[in-house]
Image 1 (tube, one colour):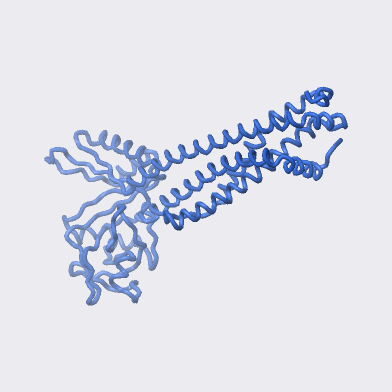
Image 2 (tube, rainbow, N blue to C red):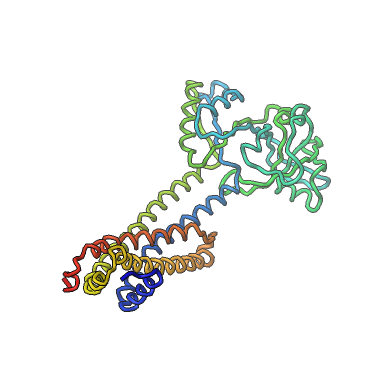
Length: 398
């Protein structure tokens, strides 16, 4: 007796209602497994969002080599653009590079009668934006002519613009630094260099003008942007080896603006692996329960199966009935788990931990896929056993 898909669903729901205890236990096993997987994915999504927010508050992850004589008898070598370009080619994981010069001894900026103190003064090279990812919010970045002609132009960050100009547009305004008038041509976004830093304001000069302004009171460094945060440790070790080979007898230190975030990312990945393992274990346990319950269902309905086979049902149709039951229970248990975990995570994220959380459809799809894979997969072997039953033995209930 062949069943249409609609009749198959009707028979399936009748069978599930007929033994609601067995059906409930099967759905509960799916619910627990999917809930564990979905909760793991939600936690991973929250921690990833938090890490991305911290990364967005800083310049793109970079490393800076510092080379010095351990006896301090020799002057440290000055790294040239050619050397840094060679390092970029030979060390995997470096996306771009630029140079910056920190100016010491100057930290005040004046606009009309407003004076801002504790301001960072930094000279930058032409490709500074490509390395750091800093965006210009108003005006423009330095042009090649600004570098070549030593123009007295500067870029201020948003924090300093707020302190100096308030409601006035900074573009085109004149500010005084160390008695020299500079014209503001751009405003950049404000970012942190370190985790606990509270930016007080930054002025960017062209690298060429910096040497005029600072004289000998400056420190130039190369910034090598990482292609990915996860490559930080590899790049650090490779750069240290590279410069030690070029400068034997000198010590090499590699600084970074993202070492703490790299460690946090590694800890997050390790925690995620553990949580995913727990979730998969819960799914496997649920699958074993489904398999056992399906075997029990086959034993209970042996005569029914024999009767259907005697009336013309094919092996595939008999298997489809049990697999459909498992699929329906997987759907019900999976949907209930995803909805429950979503609301619990939303409440915990907003009211308890105050962390960012957004429902991600791909995580729900992965969780539901796991539910179907475990539910249908666990019922497959019992369903194959059904197909191999002898009709006469089945009718006798053997």
